[in-house]
Length: 326
Image 1 (cartoon, rainbow, N blue to C red):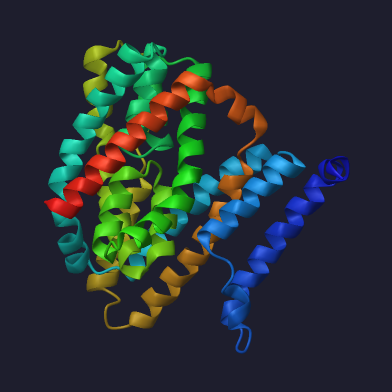
Image 2 (cartoon, rainbow, N blue to C red):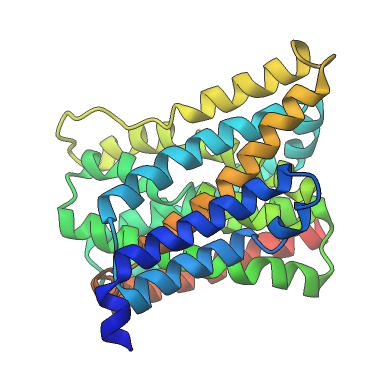
């Protein structure tokens, strides 16, 4: 059976992509809206994981490219469903703690990884950076600055990726169990989950308000990539490469401004764009899940994964305590 699945993995991959796409588009066809209800971010991610781990990895380059681009377009599209004043109000509360948590996560991450577990210095720093700010984007930005080896980058990215996949499943469940409000969950997800994709996916699974809060705080937090990369040059000798800046964050802000001041009188336009963006985001979850392979899991290793898990627990519990009792 496994041999059959592995042999026909590309056909299975394309079939699942087709079913997901058609199901999502069915929501726009009168009378067929119910056919798209089963397609949620966790379901799409789970299907991607099943295809990758059971059938085998398919189109790795395509998965990486599509997931990256489609995520960026989806985030920008979500901006057309947000109002600037409401977004600023929802993110203001989490701003101060975001600043404190970024600095604290970097310090605790290096203590756990480099000092306690004796993880390679560059790997420990990359995992700490990815946990502190925005996962893979932060690792990609900081990597060239510290002249990290390809193997260090791969291990850090794999560690963050595995934890992101777990977060997308368990955070909405934990939020419901803890009785968190939309505002509380959005703030918690933005601070405690690494990558923007999983933050947005978890927020979307929890509710519309949680999605807006999580996206706004996370993208504001992602701007810390720039000062982090600059500060890193003080501790590591850089190689002169340019810092990778996630410019889609700027376009996300532009989209919010356009929705607030330009197309505010035509709300159906912004609603249509943001709805398409949410559907594209769900499809993105599949491509992210399909990118995981047994090779990636083996590359993680025990110590880097332990560092990632321990640091994740610290920032998750710490941020939750702040949100509930501040």
